[in-house]
Length: 250
Ligand code: OAD
Image 1 (cartoon, rainbow, N blue to C red):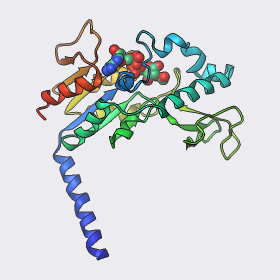
Image 2: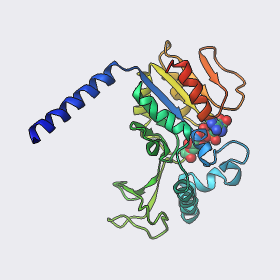
Image 3: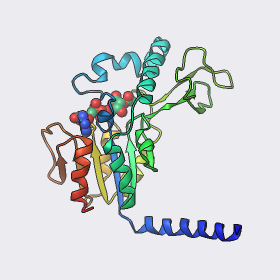
Image 4: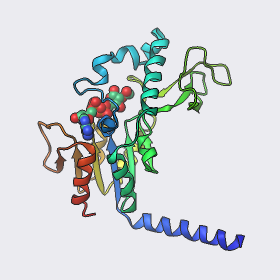
């Protein structure tokens, strides 16, 4: 019995790998607008987070040195907001695209709503809210205790160093950018959803898309200048993704 179970398992894994090889590679770059319909504020829209907080007070290494309690409080609030949020229809539609495409998501979002919706390949360019990192030399990363979301001054890693949010702050290196570039270069279809494309190096990823790869942009706001090879779907993420399915003939 055990032998046949293990055979079936191996056979299935083999079949899945084969299926993936035959699928087109769909690469999706998402930003804060992807989670807007889940009730998570964007940064630069009117009423966005950067109207309420100054970036330099809460999202830079200098802010951390100057007032770590304020920085920790800012991310404690973000964590609480995330735990009160659910994936929206757009997140679920994207997860469903894995049936048709070898789908890889590159997200600037620090929430985990793509994963909650069922997407299995998600690269977080700007870190993750539900992880924390040691400020010691090893910079070890730990999962946040979901029963106690707050990280305060005095919360230490096992080696005795203060914990900090596992977020890429402005002015810090983006360790996943090389992986993101490689994924982008392989895209057969490239989709951008809900990002103002104002933050680099994330915004530069579009320059690595192959010249014959179709690019779709889903965003409800007007875009002043759009290169001819990019198809704009001027809608919110959920509705826009339904339109995308029609473009992709599924
Ligand atoms: P922004 O706030 O800059 O841009 C949000 C984009 O989402 C805008 O283009 C909006 O038009 C669009 N949008 C709004 N509602 C939408 C909806 N329902 N559906 C789809 N799109 C919608 O956010 P990002 O571009 O993600 O980094 O910002 C990039 C980075 O800047 C963030 O990762 C964060 C921020 O500072 C760090 O904190 C390190």
